Image 1 (cartoon, rainbow, N blue to C red):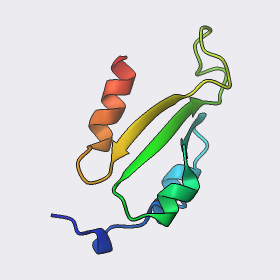
Image 2: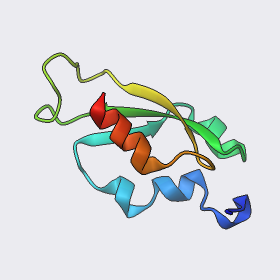
Image 3: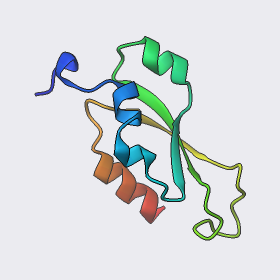
Length: 86
């Protein structure tokens, strides 16, 4: 079991080197101020493909996939697998 005081904050996670790497894909908080100000385990994220070579022709640069992520219950690998399959 993971207690909230043992988990890194959203701010700490977003500053992690994993999220700083330029992969052509960008994940942003939909409402950054709210996510940082509260201790709620749920955040709304937006995923954008910023590298034109990785983006399909039917998607535009300013389009994003917005989704809820529950940091206590959701498995990041399973969320990513679901996105790849869709």
